[in-house]
Image (cartoon, rainbow, N blue to C red):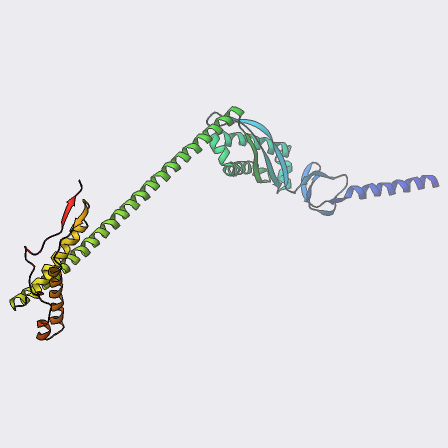
Length: 335
């Protein structure tokens, strides 16, 4: 009787331990458990320690509430321009509602993966190959919007979808490389032609500015030459007027001055002629000296010299060299 009581006691203790183990549930951080009573959902257990009714309540689903990542398997896709490419990607999602994720869909991960692959073919199949290669951000945004909208009733939030690799066929890659090379050569030719055009324009501008400056220089030189000739003519006119006035006043020294000036200029022209080698000059020195004496007399009178000084001038200074006395320099041409 005592042994039966001890056995019964141990059975009760064991039953109590089993009941406690079945009643006490610990939920880890990042997870949520659903509780079912006779197969029907009743409540959700958050992270921490919880007690349920043993034998009546049970844990339905242990749902991971953390963000998860899946690799999207590689698959072949035909683009809008009939180019076949192989594409793979990566999917990030997070369960927001454990109840919906547990009871609205069966095999949540497989469902998300299949709907992602299907929409990946739909989105990328509606685009050209050039758009696929150059607009990955657009593809990611479109695909995420479509998949997120499809999985929203399941209590799932798709946070990000990234296309990892787009692999066109080898022959298509070679054709793209040839096209890219031709495009670069075209751009290089255009830039070179543009550079030549700019250089020609700059050279033309430089020639234009040079011609303008040269024309302005010639105009300025012409103005200066005209001004110089005008002043020379004015000086010559004043000199002629003064000589005329001197002759009218009875002063013959002015005539001697002009005769001597022309005489000396004629000698200079004869001496500088290129076709003359030997020059014979049988000149009368008194005629030249008389002309120079006339110049001296004019200078004395200009500075207010007295009349007696003029009387003491060299003999014959007032005479004008005649044609018979003045013998121009003769020359003998080369034989």
